[in-house]
Amino acid sequence: MLTTVQKLQPQSKDTKRKKFRKWFFISIFPLLIFYTIFISPLLEPYIEANIFSLIRDVKVEKFNYLTPVYATSSEGGKYSLSAIQDRNELEKIRSKTKYYVEDPRVLAMSKFLSDYNSPMQPYAEVFVVEADRYGLDWRLIAGISGVESAFGNICPEGSHNGWGWRGINRNEDGWSIFASWEDAIVHITERMALGYGTDLTPFDIESTYCPPCGEAFGHPWANGVTRYMNELNYYLNNLEKI
Image (cartoon, rainbow, N blue to C red; front, side, top):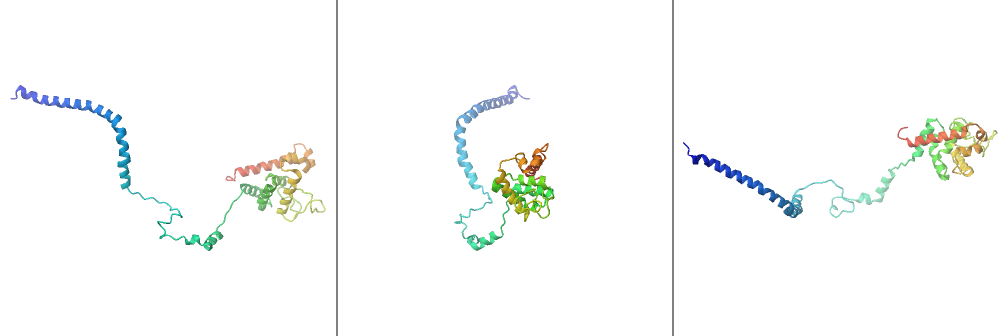
C-alpha cells in the first residue's frame, strides 16, 4: 500500500512541468519581440545577400536566347556569316522578297465600286492617288460618277465619260471622249481641283456643275453625291466587315 508521500510525488512532478511550460511560454514572447525589433533587421539582409546568392549560384537554369550578331567572340568558330556578307546572296534574297502596302482607302474604293458593278473598279487606286496629288477629297470624283452615270454604267459608248463631262475631245453631242477610264479619272480630278478648288462640298459645286440641279427642289445632285461619299466613309471604317 502506497504511503501518503508516494501518492504526492507524481503530483509534484506534474506541478514542476506545468510551471516550466508556463515560464517557457511567458519568456518566449519577449524574445520574439526582441528578435523582430532588433535582430531581424540586421540578420535578414545578411541572409538574403549571402545565403540566397549561394543558392542561386548552385542552381543551374537554361534559357533559349539569341546571341547578337556582333557578339561573335565566343561563338566565332561555330557559325559562319559569309552568306550575309556576300552581296550576291543578299541580292538573291531581295529578288524573292515582295512588299505589299495597301492604302485602306484603295481597298474601300475597290470594294465600293465592285458592289456597284462599276467598270472603274480596277482603277480604284487611281481615284485615291490623283485626289491626293491635288489635295482633293478622295471620295468626290467617284461620288459624282455615281450620280452622273451609275459609276460608269450609263454613259456614251466607248467614251469612258462617267461624269457628264463636256471639255476636251468632244463628240458630236458635246460629251468628252477619253481613251481609258484611267485617263478620264486623271483629267477630271485635275480639272475639278483647279477649277472648283479643293475645299468645296457637293452643295457648293452643284449650281456650277449642274445648273438645273442647283435650282431643283431638294438638291438631288448634291444630296446624291454626298450620299455616295458617306457610303465610301462607311466602307473605309468597316473594311473588316465588308
